[in-house]
Image (cartoon, rainbow, N blue to C red):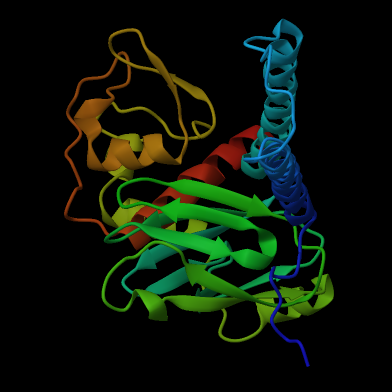
Length: 314
């Protein structure tokens, strides 16, 4: 019995759109290939040696034909470009209500942590019908988080944060791969994605040993590393307050402005002299080599929570 699918199943709406672009391009390639092959065979037979075909007054140019074979492929290629661009933008613009999950890639495993503190290794449980955004970084080399059934793949880079999102529409278990060669045990860096009914997901999320939320752990790290001594309300050193900073513009020395996203917060901790806030002295020490990627994710989650509390008036 045939049990070798040429394509993985589609478990998100976006997967169907990605397939539509792919099969559209494939159809265009097949059509042009068939047309060219048919014309080659036709003229090879018509003008074969010994045929009686008239070879006099051969056409050297044909303006209308030249315009047609330039304009038609141009419109087809631009149509493919427009369709692919719309799908691409949808893939990388996560909805504002997407729940965030933090991914840390390392040789050779995926360390996954939910906002409530629940951890997973090489497994990711998510609810069906709800958007999920992954915030990802690597502890060592370049990895690539790849879920074929979702048609979703994103490189995971050391020293940077990348993201991807999806909204599964079919419950089940799906394969997770690292799609970037990352060392001798690269082939073992695999896992599973479990798409669950919302009620089952909530039960799973609250099961097991209860742990601190990422934001709470980040708050403790924020204090233990002495950050509150400068960035707190009663600090003795004048430093920028962090309440409500996430997602907002930050003016820098020199006149430039940046948005306080995950990358900005990370760089401010590890490379504080690279982006000094306007009106403040460059006195913050670097924490590079002193703080782990896992701890950075927790501190960032805490600062993001400060931003949410500020906007909600809490």
